Image (cartoon, rainbow, N blue to C red):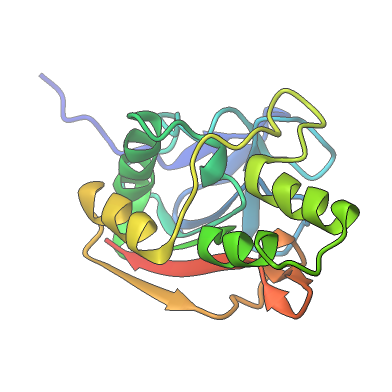
Length: 193
């Protein structure tokens, strides 16, 4: 039986081969094109390289990514099994020296904001949308909420060895950088395999 050679390239949505000689930097749910990063999203656009659900990274070989950046995506997954299985998929495609950078709405902050007695109804409604999703399309519904302890527990259950909270990644201009009423509404964490 011949020895199976590892994959040395992937094919993007346009049929172009993307070399895996160097590990990928994968931006899941990205909207901003950046050199050296490949965007994977469930909805097609001009900046997307790969189309699919973040819960299925089967097209990416094991240890093919050096970094995964995932901002305001995990809250769209079911907390029953979908979240852990998705994180296991992230863990599988990351190299042992890689890192996962994940940002989610911070329920501790959002609950504190929502409970402020001086919010008017429009402000309260906006905080509620940050908690449950804007619901502007079929994908914009939140199924899971996170505090640092809940996210860390999920990451460890999926095989990650460590999770560290950070203030900001400073990589992309996205929801991870939103400040509302002087509060950073995102929980940002770096996890290592």
